[in-house]
Amino acid sequence: MQGVWRRVVRFSVAAATLACLGTAWGGQVEVLHWWTSGGESRSVEELKRLLAAQGHTWRDFAVVGGGGDSAMSVLRSRVLAGNPPAAAQIKGPAIKEWGRLDVLADLEDVAAAQKWDAQLPRVVADVMKVNGRYVAVPVNVHRVNWLWINRDALRKAGARAPNTWEEFFAVAEKMRQAGIVPVAHGGQSWQEFTTFESVVLGVGGADFYRRAFVQLDPKALHSDTMSRSLQTFRRIKDYTDRRAPGRDWNVATAMVIKGEAGMQFMGDWAKGEFLAAGKEPSRDFLCVSAPGTARAFSFNVDSFAMFRLKDPAAVQAQKALAATIMRPEFQQSFNLNKGSIPVGTGVQMDRFDLCAQESSAYFVATAMINTLVPSIAHLMAQPASVEGAMREAVAAYWNNERMTTDEAMLRLVAAAKPTAARPAQP
Ligand code: GAL
Image (cartoon, rainbow, N blue to C red; front, side, top):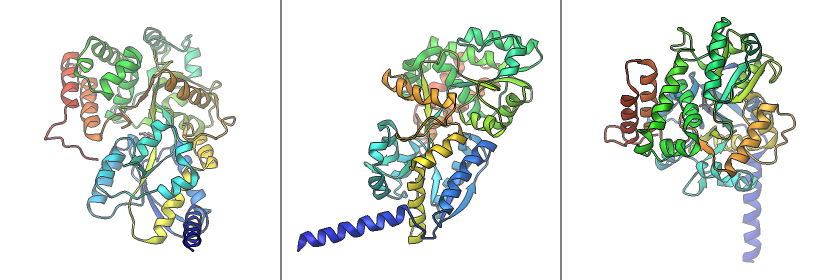
């Protein structure tokens, strides 16, 4: 008899899970995100459409601001007020920090039904779990260490895509002489930090990057290699224009798209902007590894963490959202627009362009040779408190030409130390 009951219970659990994963239940899911640029909104539309097809309503909670700083402040106040959204774009170590506050929902049933453990690379799955249980769902893998180049600008400058820093500065010089702004930069601290991490990866290599930004080793943060990285970083500034301060990243990308500027350091969400503008890789623009980083990959995995909710219909909608994100058809259509690559295995890559195919091959290859590193500027390597303090140090150095490299390194070392004044917080 017990056996029969066990089977009945097992059947009901399976039926309930299937119901969550699929059909119309009609719940509402409020989603906090910062995907508001051209390419980003096209990608998000895909998710809204697939959710609506299952009878659920998407309530958009978009907070403008690349990199997500403003979105995270808004999230903190909503959670503190006891009114969290159903899902929020939360990434990296912050997932565990929110998990510790005991506010996240358990997604184990969805994860088991779709076999997430088998589908996801370990390096990604571990980040999505708190105490061994899934609380977040990954959307994609972005590669941060790219340099985007306008093909015509390169031709006008009579130059070829650079591989090394010296070649990069030679190209930049030629572009300037051809009347093109060599580097499109958006003067916001997260964009400065994005460029800086690629410089450190290119100048110091993956092991050095890891010692500095993952292990926070003061001997790496204050070293000849870090000093050289800071000097290289500052040299780039000479090739940006005066109107950079405050500029949004996608406005900087638009300068490269139009050929007003030649190059941009940015993760491959920039490719989403090129594609949304009808541009094609190789024909109109080039995606090349940031100088010196061809054999490395700094990764940025976007994900949604789910908050614990009371309303059963909303819980169903939330689970449907998580399940939809992990479906291969969503992973394909979303990432085709977003510029990133699918996070799960089993997605056909033949519809993806050369940049994405290269990224996908590098993601696997760099993991094997241990040059796959978490992006510090995109909250993969450190909690927000440490990342924020380091980012401000780098931005201060970029913006204040009187600051010496030594002063900048001392600030980085100080930023890496947890202090009472800067307690860990999500
Ligand atoms: C990153 C995020 C990307 C992209 C970018 C600019 O942090 O991971 O998906 O949206 O910000 O907004």
